[in-house]
Image (cartoon, rainbow, N blue to C red; front, top):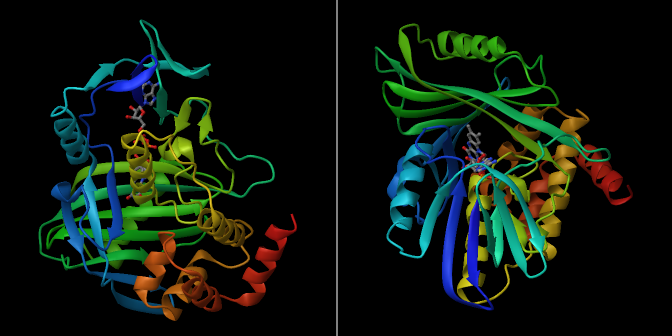
Length: 364
Ligand SMILES: Cc1cc2nc3c(=O)[nH]c(=O)nc-3n(C[C@H](O)[C@H](O)[C@H](O)COP(=O)(O)OP(=O)(O)OC[C@H]3O[C@@H](n4cnc5c(N)ncnc54)[C@H](O)[C@@H]3O)c2cc1C
């Protein structure tokens, strides 16, 4: 939760207050994403890969990601880094307490806690005050996952090659794949990920991880050194990005890509656009324009195909990776391709299924 406090009626003080329920000290998530050039979080990237594997039951490929690199950041390193950078600035302040509500009142944004009311020119809110749930008339899947960082007795991993998706796991619950991020020859984060309408019982994630590590990776002697899990909404529902002086950011601002569940890079790009505007004394920009609408349309079509199970996730991603250089696919998944490359991607998936889904979306 970020606030930008204003000394009426000017912006000249540029005071920023960060309100969070508690200091962020836990390693509660691992972020992975891809990029071409090192960005501001490069100092906390703990591992990067230029090669990744992709597997379905009928297809295996080693993908050379050039010009991209796939990168991993541990949550705790990110929080520490951001906090240290922020404390270099005397105009950034921290307040730790649960936020009860945020709202807009005339030209002010208002934040309420049990002990205080703060007012500001803007509030940038990343709190989900209402839990996300499927909305009638929209497509919705949960991306849910459990990951174990394991340490093996024997060297078994190729630390230069991660596994982006391995669909050679049971698809009984719907689209499911394993994701393997080796840090060294004896350490890797192995994550069981599903895109489905319903969550599983806790023991089903563990059973799938045990099965994959034991049988697919052939590792019997290992210990679990870190556990993480998450639930990310993949939805065609449009979240309001602005309510008066309150701007929603992150997951609360709809920054999860509906068809992939990736959010990190989208959040960073959106946050930078907002920060650039504020630095130039402009209003935060709205996420609008042809490119935004174009990629939202693609997301809805792909999410519709996956939700209606017109094609399995394994077949969709196999068709895309088989039919395109990986750089084009990563650019497309990052909402950064132009129309010519978009059309090449579309030509790699069955026109009947995707064309019908596109028409259904256009005439809904
Ligand atoms: C385990 C996990 C792994 C993920 N991995 C990836 C990945 O590899 N790649 C990717 O692209 N995306 C990933 N994501 C998705 C997404 O990038 C993250 O969820 C990201 O942290 C979202 O950022 P956010 O700012 O929206 O929310 P958060 O990071 O959750 O921040 C919300 C903040 O609000 C605070 N807060 C909440 N309620 C209150 C309250 N009432 N009062 C005060 N403060 C409050 C919280 O303490 C928190 O600091 C992952 C998500 C999870 C959960």
